[in-house]
Amino acid sequence: MIRRVQDARPELTQTEIARRAGVSVAAVNTWVNGARMPSRKSCDKLADALSEPRERVFAAANRRVPGPLAPDAEERILALYRRLTADEQRIVERQLAALAADDHQM
Image (cartoon, rainbow, N blue to C red; front, side, top):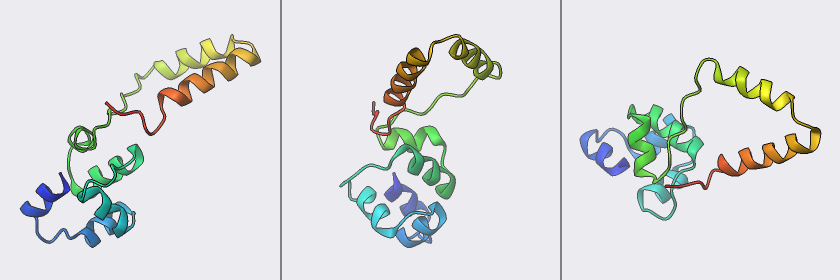
């Protein structure tokens, strides 16, 4: 994906992409060469840096795009969470952390 963008926009060197995304040139190089895939956070940075849709960047990195949070979802989730015991809250937090883990790929 980065190579495709670079082919269309030759001014976007790996150095320039790294600068725009706030990552190292070495990181961009590993992504371009397929040695590693960018994290979710880096995918967001790349989407902004390359002016590419998030969905395209995440798909190229074989990652799921985090879903949008409905306007009332946060309050509903917090209301349910507040009804849990301290032990249940810790369990839910661990489950959420596992679901949101950066290595959660398609």
